[in-house]
Amino acid sequence: MRLADTVDRRAVLRTLGGGAIAVFVVGCGGSDAPAYTPTVPDLVSPSSIPDPIGHVITRWPHDEFARGAYSYLARGSSPDDRRALATSIDDRLWIAGEAVDSWNPATVHGAFSSGRKAAQQVATTDARRVLVVGAGIAGLSAARFLTDEGIEVRIIEARNRTGGRIHTDRSLGVALDLGASWIQGPDSNVITDLCNNAGIERVATNYNDLVVRSDTGEYIPGPEIPERYEIAADVVLEYAADLRDLEPGFDDEGASLLGRDVVFPDGYDQVVDHLADGLDISLSDKVTEVQLGAGGPIVIADSGEHAADAVIVTVPLGVLKEDVITFVPPLPDTHRGAIERLGMGHLQKVYLQFPEVWWEPEIQFFGLLGSDSDRFPWWMNMAPITGDPVLVAFHGGSAADELIELTDEAIVDDALLALHQMFGVGSGS
Image 1: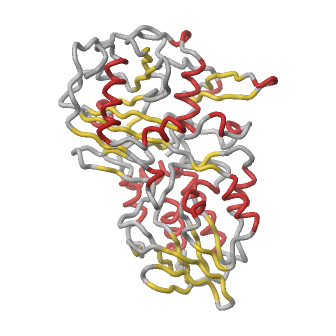
Image 2 (image 1 turned 45 degrees about the vertical axis):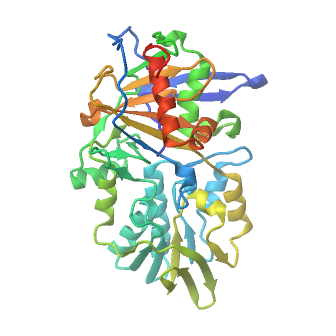
Image 3 (image 1 turned 60 degrees about the vertical axis):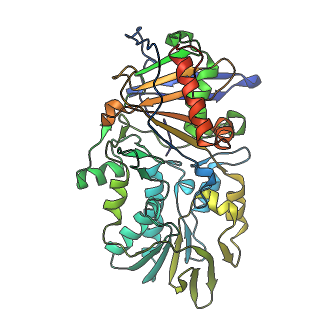
């Protein structure tokens, strides 16, 4: 689900002496790439903006099976906490998911890799029956590996669908990814390999194809864009947390990514369906307790008690923080401390569908530099991706926390006001 961890446009904040902040952009192949469109593009000036004919709004912190978007290094945490969470408990219980992957945290391929690593460790034991809690990408990855190794595996999933925080909505007649959207750094990425094997179409995005306007509709050239916007659009949206909540050195976490990020015109859930094909999955089956008794692990779910030789728990960090699953005996202090210290971020998307494209049809991204608010700082144009007249706004951190408390109607009204401001169309309606 992580937004913009890419080599062709990755804004990085580093804390310097005295608390000063420097912002720079890392370019492909080590050379600096322009952060924004270098010349003034041909911009439209609509006389009016039509009302949207449909909308979809994400609310991941209110989702009882997610409790947030993805993890981040909160104040007081470190990558060691991720590594601690990945450590097995008595070679019978493993925790997997994007939050435990110190190489690529907060990414789909990080979640996939964490599930695969846990499964590989299980395969070195004498376990022949394995239960996987959660059918997100980490759980599916673990189950696929173990199944292919000839080990009996069952996935127990609380939702009525697979995918977890990968969820494609088609209620507006177009595939809209509510959670994860991108393959980040698709070169040498395991998700790319899955897509190639399944013949899944992808479309490259270019974060440099960006036009930023003020809240009076004025175009802002790249050199004149203030640091405040860089923080709101690049840091808060990438890490799903405000700068003040991030541990110093947060930007040093993770491995380098290569290649231009890609999205799915027909939905990320195609990857989920491909990975889940043929696996034994029990849906709408909420797990409430995991026991590590002398006779072996037991998982208690809505469907009853399930015995196994090993258990891999892949629920999101936000769910672990809520203590909705009881561990008997309790998790070790190392694991509990890591869960407490790591942060669970909030990234919200607001999709608006219009009768037709009234904005610049080919520009991929729009930015709004508000005078007194970080709401609606970054928009993506879905027309070049799917051919549909859809815009999606991204919000992170406290701005997303504020919006999520509003009704859908109020959020749509705020979004329309932002578009009126961005395109210089009066004060909105």
